Each structure stands twice: as structure tokens, then as C-alpha cells.
Length: 425
Image (cartoon, rainbow, N blue to C red; front, side, top):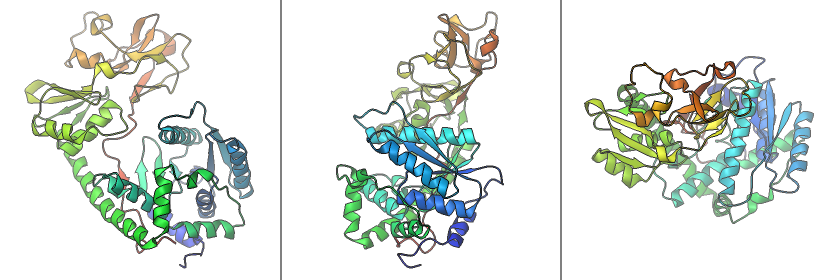
């Protein structure tokens, strides 16, 4: 394929077949569409690949013209025969780590829309140029081996699969695809803002395309190596770790390899980032009671260890609404609750443990961190311990343990197509 040629429907269909299986007719596959050429090309290709496709357009509200551009994008998708939904983010304020906060809110909105539509897959338009920029930025930040694998072609999230089918395609081919369809797109001026690390990486790569090809080849090798490590780690966890739905993990006397221990601490603490490598390596080499990154390592029976949430780091209580996420780890599934109900830590066990019931095998400091339903200043339900509310409105409420990140990403790396590792067209 020449650099300026559009992506052919046959090539895209073959790529999607390799990433299957896909749901049958009647179940949509969602496409995140910013309105730029990349995501418009993806939407066009996806619509040619299957009938049941839905576009999701997010308005961050950070620029005066963003709503107009979002409405424009919805209209353009509609003209292409793609039903589209506008998602408006609220509460995104300018300030520190704005890009990170915007990204988190964007994906929360996209995943929520997928759930609402019954979609199991969300397509996003990251392409070969984006992948090369990611590798360059991670090299500059001295990322570890996992980070150098860059973006995965497919990642299983909690209930939606995130798929990047264009990682082997260069931006020029995507522009050509949109032009060939007679469609228009939006150019986001922030993409050229050199105050951002990605824009600086893009500028650096524009001067030498051979560097970009080398970076893509590096990502391919690192991705295959990461996939092998993830497979090994999954087997270790299955053999040695016990996960409790209340949010803690039981480990053997020698804890876990440092790489896995780091991932477990991040998940139990509900964090976005792994703890300091040096601290984790020290614990893995010499297991001992400690607190790190919002997590407590607690000695338990027969030399085993509990990796549990640190009480002092728990989130404050919040209104108990269906779908509420408490402590970044627990999602409340319940019928609509009357005003006054709240979600928070269960707290002192003596205040809510049923009279006459046998004492739990788990330490009280773990039970105090469990999510609970409160009303009138009292604990009414601790579902993980089988304590149910007598009030009908909350009798069937449950908390699903769903941290922002899994221990292992369950992702497919090695993400460029065969023969495409050095090509950006």
C-alpha cells in the first residue's frame, strides 16, 4: 500500500477478523470519535465493516468552540449512516494534571455509554504515529520494560474491551481514507501545543521517519516480551494468590515476585500508578509488616500475608446512589435508595457484627475497611459479610470490587500488523 492510499475495506475487515470474535447482529460496536481525521477514518472503516456501529462523541467543554465541534461531528457521523451519541463532561476544571483528569473522565463516560447501549467493545483510533510517540515519551521517562510495550491492540477492561485496530496504520493513510469518503473533520489546535509532551514528541519524530519506524519495531518486541511475562504472572497468581471480594489478597510466606507485588499493591490501594520500585523490591526480598501506597502488609496464619487496604487512606463516605464508586474500588449495585443513605467504611466491627454470630476468621482491621451502607448514623448493611439491611430499599444492595486497574492487563501487545513495524503510512 502506498503512503497516500486510503485503508482498504478488505484490509480493515481482515484486521478486525483477527481481533474477534465479535458480537452478532443487534449488538453495537462503539467507536470513540473526537471529530479528528483519525477517529473519523476509524468510524468510516467500522461502518463499512459491519452494520451495527455506534459513534460516541465526547465534549470536554475546555474550549469555547468544543460544543459546536462536537455537534458538528455528530451530524457528520449521522450523514455517514452512523448513529451517534453526544457525551458532555461536567466538572472538569482547569488546573494540575488536567490532561490526565480529562482522559479518565472521558473513558468513564465512554464506558458508561457502552454499558447503556449494551456494547461489549469500544474502538479507539490510536495509530502508528501515536504508538511511536508513546514509545519515545516512555523512553525519555526511563519507563520499565512493560511501559516500552506502549499501547496494546486490545485490552479487556471490567466490562468493555478497548480495541485499537489502527496501530499498524500511519496517519497519512487515515487522512486519505477520510478524503476518499468525502467526509470532513476537525483539527484540534491543542495537538500542536508544544507545551505538551506528546506534541514535542510528534515534532521530534517529524524530522526523521526512520526513527519512528525503529520505535515501532521496539514496541513490537517489547509487547511480545510483555505478553509472555503477563502469561507467566497469571499462572503464578492462579497457583499462589487468593483474592477476597472484600478487596484484600492472601499471599504465601515469601509474598510474591516484586513485579507482581507492585501490581497487587496498586490494585488493592485503588491507585493509578505503581508504588516506588525500590520500596517494593525491598519488601519482596525481605517480607515484613509495612504500609506502602495506601496498602498494609499484614502477617497472618501459617506465615501467610494479607495485602489489604490501609484504614487511614480510605475515602470518606458519599451518597449511596446506584452506580456510585467508593474508594475507587467498589461499585454499588442497588435499586434507587431514598435520601439519607450513604456509602462508607464499615468501621468498628462491634458496632455492626450480628449478636451471637461466630467471630470472623478475618482480622478486624480488614473488616473495618469493607464498604457498608449507612443510614441515620448507623451501619445498615455490610454485604461482603452477609449483613443485609432490613429496609426493603437496600435489602439487595451489593458492592462489586472493581479497581481502576487489574493486576494483569489481560491485554494483547505486539500491536503492529505483520510487515508494518517500520511503516507510518
